[in-house]
Each structure stands twice: as C-alpha cells, then as structure tokens.
Length: 127
View 1 (cartoon, rainbow, N blue to C red):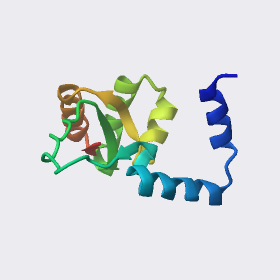
View 2 (cartoon, rainbow, N blue to C red):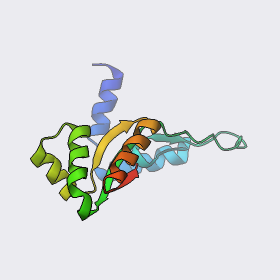
View 3 (cartoon, rainbow, N blue to C red):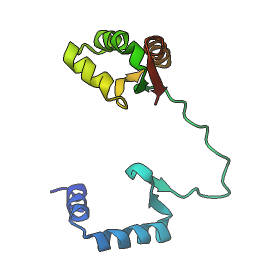
View 4 (cartoon, rainbow, N blue to C red):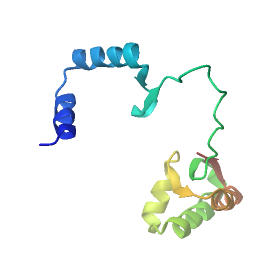
C-alpha cells in the first residue's frame, strides 16, 4: 500500500476530536486551515502582496422563483420547451417554484432564458 493511501485511510478513520486537534495543529504549526467548502487554505508567506483578483463567474443557473398565476399556462409551455419535460412534470415544476430551470449556462444563454421566462409570467433569478 502506498504512503498516500495509508495516510488517507488514517485520516478517514480519525474521530471528530482527533480531527479537530489535527486541524488546530496544522493551523498553529504550518498556517494551514480548512476553508468553507472543504478547500485547504495556506497562510500567505511574507507581507501580503495584495488581494487576488476575484474570479469572474462563467456558469449560471436560471432559477424560477415565483409565478404570475394569470400567465401560468404560457410559462408551463416555455418550461416544457426548455427542459424537455412532459406536460404534467412541467406543470408540477411551475407549481413549486424555487428550483433551477437550467444549470451551467453561459451568461448570454442564462440572460436569454431569463428574459423568455419573465415575458411569460415567471420571476427569475440567476445564481
């Protein structure tokens, strides 16, 4: 078994108390700490050379937040067309807003879909 596998197996078997102690040790000794989402962050060495440029978002989710009851039927038609759902599934989708209609779209595609849904009675948010 390789060293990496052995280390991984040992880490996976740590108790919660041991994991907290390991985290504190890595932070105090090496300046390494877990960030939100499980990524590992290392403390900046030296005098902090300025903030890194924020990464521009390239993938968008189009989320249906609310529905205008007067325009529900045209909205169902658009949701069917865009998602490929059947009539019953599209109706159920529109009846319970808050879910993404499509995910991982470019900015242009997301804006186009948002406009189309809003023109047909939906309140939409890009996430």
